[in-house]
Length: 216
Image 1: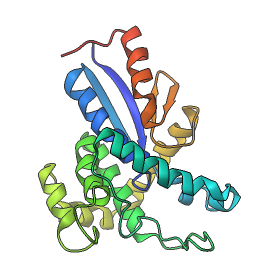
Image 2: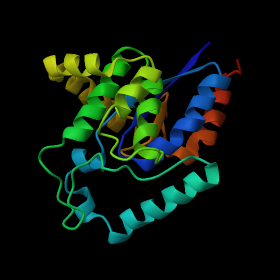
Image 3: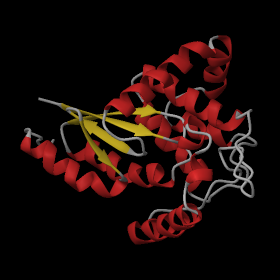
């Protein structure tokens, strides 16, 4: 029997990106379905979050995510531009968020199509692997989407025609994310049990194996 896991993912989270290679390997090796469900970053969900957090919080994430990437051999660089429009001096979050709204809605559309993991992996690489400058410019995203079997222009047009449909998907994802028992990303959820962070994938596999996970 194929087991199923939800993966709550944010395009701004370095750890979400860093979780993708192991996640794809799991799907390749095991009889497992991973339902990637995009959510907005905590900076959008909780606008005052970074103002309340210790100043060391963001600095540690930068340090740690870089060394995790180095340890795992994953190409890595923080996105340019940041998917979130935020003043990093005042930590104010802009009211208009064109990048993260577009990215998250696109992934929501891929979720409805049942192919959000493949789509998100292709797009996240453009943001995070350091191979391009200005991921939001030119045809970088379009070419990545095409490799995953998607027509980016058609997706953008469909979302523009009915943005509320995809916002509803995101809202439901965020609701279920909270109900899973954690607020951070990436969070894997299996049978109402959350596994937070890319460093909990091995623990997730252990739990899945106790429930009958088998290799392909």
